[in-house]
Image (cartoon, rainbow, N blue to C red; front, side):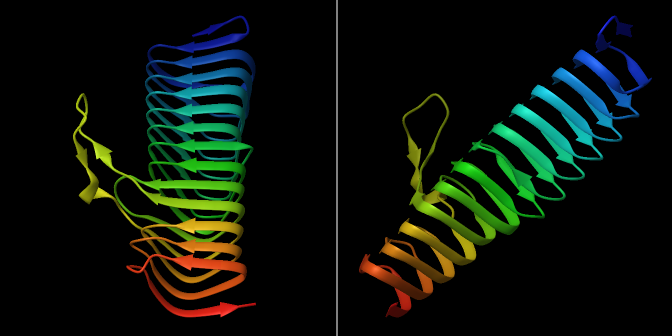
Length: 240
């Protein structure tokens, strides 16, 4: 049902798009046109057949957007699928996010999982969950903690890039299952300052490079400094 400048859906049905202050979906709602709103919340199941522009979005249920999404703040604790591009300036993912095109913004915090078919570009990219990026992951600061499962990016580029082995804690305990730590798999990593653990890469290129335990690297090219753990595998090292 539509109430003044708000669209509140508690049942099921199809509704027009347009300009709203708040959209809240607790039932099952389809929105057939472009949406422009301040608040977009999904607790049930929703499908937006065109584009969504909002100031803040909170997805606790299941949301699908066929077109592009633009949001100042995005919190996903459920499941969200975006059929086009996504500009999510401050993004926090505790559930799952899938993007068919590119994903970009200012700050990305990932504790769940993301899957992106295009490039990912952020000022700060912080992941302790998992990701599959079929394009380039680019950020001024890249921090990846491999807590569980494997992650993949075609290429990674940035200023400071840190990849560390993590540990998975059993909920409500202090018991760590470190053997569940995953690996980062990528073709190329290029940055100014690079520290890697549990990483499989064809080429690593940077100014200051440190290769930690659990790494398998085909070629390391460094400009100023290279250090590596004796357990790491590096096939070729070259100063450039």
